[in-house]
Length: 480
Image (cartoon, rainbow, N blue to C red; front, side):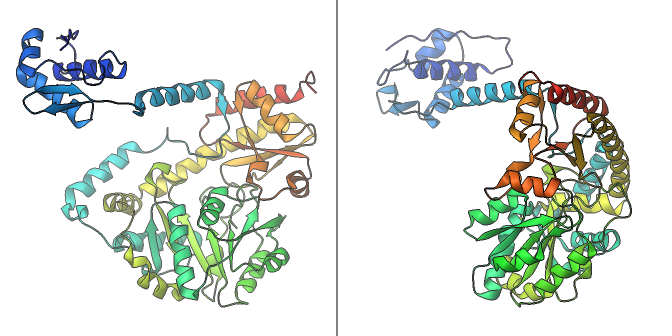
């Protein structure tokens, strides 16, 4: 038996028992205490360290529960053999170090994901949260599978007023993110028609939706875009049942689907009982030119459009709160299949967002953020126009990102040069489904290479500084 001289810090915030536990665990991991080594008894160690026996017992109990030692009746405590122990601490340290290194690499990150949270109305959110939690203890019970009715009524009113969506609260499903709702929808469609559905997606595409559908084994057919949106001629050629589109602001190209193309798409859906359109209206709240574009669902007279929206862009991504409006024709399938699943969004969060909207905080927040994003948008466009005639800007009418295209150099060279100067930009090619990507990019943009520049998370000074760095990096001829 080996004496343990544990270096204890009496004034430390870490409890004494935890210091003893950490020391012995480290000794075992470092193999200073080998397998089958006998530890001092709790009585002997407490005397040696001048601490209470219960303190030592707490440390030993923690080591026992984690499998570092075992207690043998009438014999004492022994170190267990730990060959093949997964070293969690080492892995965590490596990950942390890598993450810090990546963050240091980029001074400016033009990410198209995320939103600005510096101007979030935290005080209003706290006030609403306190009200909700203080008034209704029943919110800690299970709610309706579709989401609380009072919240669905609020969503229905909001969608009708702001997006022209025609729906009843009974047709709304609340869920934790678009990905979850998409997987649920696929089950409903398969049940309704007794077969697996095949999907058409815009190309370039919102890749998360593609990963969901491809990941559950569904056939996904990429359909090229033109200046008006998804090509209906190519849609007919691919024999898909369901078309997934982002008509108000195509991601990532920023195309607004024309009214003519919307009617063509609805006509296509009406040609078969098993045809549907999924309308992903992910960031329709932010438009900078003209009036807001009404939702495609509002034009649908035959129950063919499934509308999906989210609060991730307009409130906060961390909410993980989206909603889906089903046509009447799919409600029987939901009652048969979908109601088997509990709702995936906390009732407390549902009621906080509900009151946030009802009390007018949401509308005020949106109006303020539209002004903030518009100012950032205008600063970015003003700086990009300085790049000269060799560059083309697109997708600037709405949303939280723009596209910058050029023939000057390959896309990967643009990304590399930006990274070498501490600026992160995003290649458009990553969003294409297919092989002849450069040809597709040229057809859409008229240029050889295109990068995506998001601006929501940057302040105006960072946008100016970042674009100046990019202009210098792209105009430098030394490596060409």
